Image (cartoon, rainbow, N blue to C red):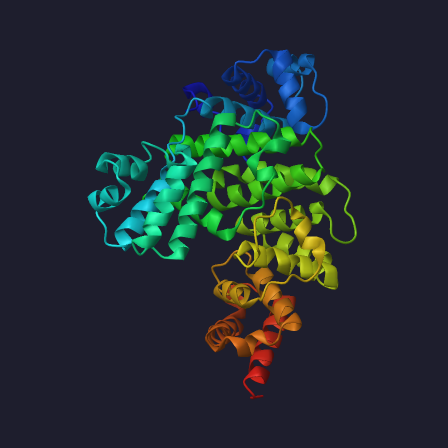
Length: 438
């Protein structure tokens, strides 16, 4: 973990006087650089790569000597480098996400560890090792995993649990790669730069990070977040607006907003840097990043950023509305196969049915949902395009009607803006029309 000296100045809080005080900055820079073990020249090179503009070694020396004060982005980048260096000493990930899912599947089928071991022809200690993460399933031979999946199916484990097990293996693999890399590798080859994650994948990771019995410990959690921040900062100087760099940035922003409150200032800095880049009409990978950053801002309590995105970067464009719905559909599992980039969003209306998407969106129509207004807008847009969904699934329609009624009864408490109120009212009217009532 972070050493005692570094802990006095990290995590950064850029809105508090100690960090804004010029007398605090030299100590922070010195502590951060010493935590990385880098010379001023190497530290300057790493800062340059993270920020996307050149930092000279003499500037680092002058900052540490109090000659002049660095700006906030430099301080946050220095913090991330220091955290990544400290976190690299955390223990390796044991692969216990898949192990916990395996245990749940086994217990759901009313099997003991001895029962499963007997069916597989292995020692019960092997099962215990898999489930505890002591013997990571993600390191197990492919043939063994396929045999395990087949046996579980024969023993009564349903296909949904088997799919969850397969996803958990991937979570363990990706977490292990991020921890091993520490954010220091090629950011454009980062696992989150080459694959679009799904709701199920993120839910499993979220449970492992902060569930009732988290499978990822505090040291690994800190290392994971530090590695993610550093990877994004390195991508800033390595083709910052390439599709892979943008995908990495937006996925990391969502994850840190959801699970690491301490990354708030870092996320704000990412927002500032993103706003400096050019904005384009129509869909681009940068549009997808804007969407994720607006959602992450809402998770952090800033709903105005999300309202602005809906009003100026979504409403009024059929292509962007389709892109938004296509992403939602992929997110909740209606897509076919894994997407390796965000380009699928730009392909127009997808072939997905929309029933699972409508159920997912209806569940999100709750006052506690940080991005509630985006959920409202997506429901409205989906029913504009596929009104038959209201008749195809009466159960979901009933749930949707009840949630819409509650929101309109508590507009002020829900914090809905004018556009969201108008859209949920139109959803309510569409439901009455589908039921043959006015």
